[in-house]
Length: 302
Image (cartoon, rainbow, N blue to C red; front, side, top):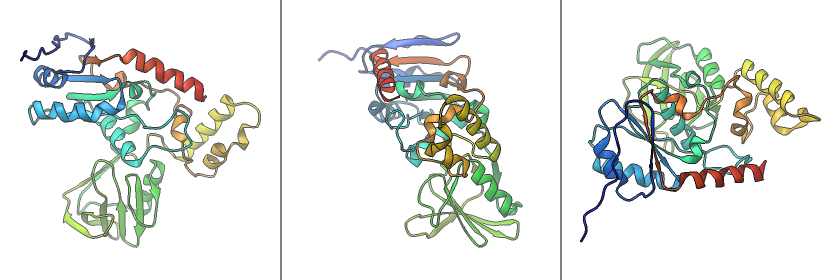
């Protein structure tokens, strides 16, 4: 039986791109080569290979090595659906960590995720942190939730949702892994507890909660006005009669609005804008062919 020939990942003194044509042995090579404090971006040719790569890298790597994913939206280009809330939460959590330069370790992303334009790094920052005993103005907090993309529901079941029941606020923050129940006494936080969205039963208390945006786009009045203005400038004719335009004008986030993300921001970013200067980029398989195929698909659906 022949020994496994591991691909060699050279060191980098600056940003460097490395192409590995075969996937075999990549996880072990990556786990052995990442240095403390380093960021290594692993580009997969297909979204379906990301989960397997992450599991394999974690198996071989030091338990303390951060291994993250940046999934794509798992939607057809210009689809009339929004990404699943869990995907949105995972993307925001990863991008927020990258923006805070807490990206050391391995980041695995399909080439389709790299082809997506992203909000500027400062747009997905942590909104706030609260613990029992802190002051939290209920009305201002709800307004903040709405403006950062959270959707009000009767019972919270998915990331990006919130519910209000008297002095109790239920919020499903993507970073928490489970919804958080915030109990208030006036404007004071009395308790923070995770709860089961199916049974609605509260669990053990939490020491603190941090809030991230619920969506990749802002939905403040100013952001909506900017979107509507850019829409009119971009699309001619009877563009104001389009369902997406009318829903945004009414303050309702339409399904599929993520594909019009550039209309919310004066400038957009790409994934390399979130990485440190000394990041290494490792491309796996025939990623160029995968990128070309995805671009043709985008053009066909425009």
